[in-house]
Image (cartoon, rainbow, N blue to C red):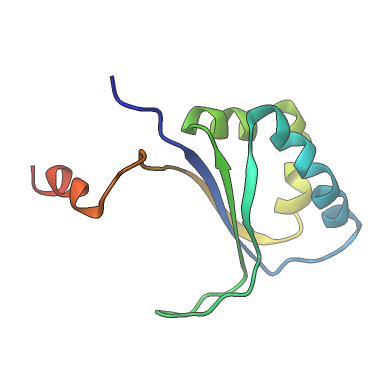
Length: 114
């Protein structure tokens, strides 16, 4: 049995129109995370570009699993506020699987060359 790995909801938010709807979204999003043990790790902090040009803010939310991340995104509470962000920004979002404790980059080689 493979260990449970964390899941992450990630987004790049560009051209955010900070208006009443966005203020409402930000004020309500934390409550939608709690039932799924979601925790905001990155929320538009200062970015130092190393390669390429980034525009907008990055958001990273950690969950105990991909299933928990998907359940949060699909939940009625989050779906009720999602349009507040989507309609007032240009953004992309995804859920990505994390890695188990002790993982090393070389562990990926078996999948890449196997």
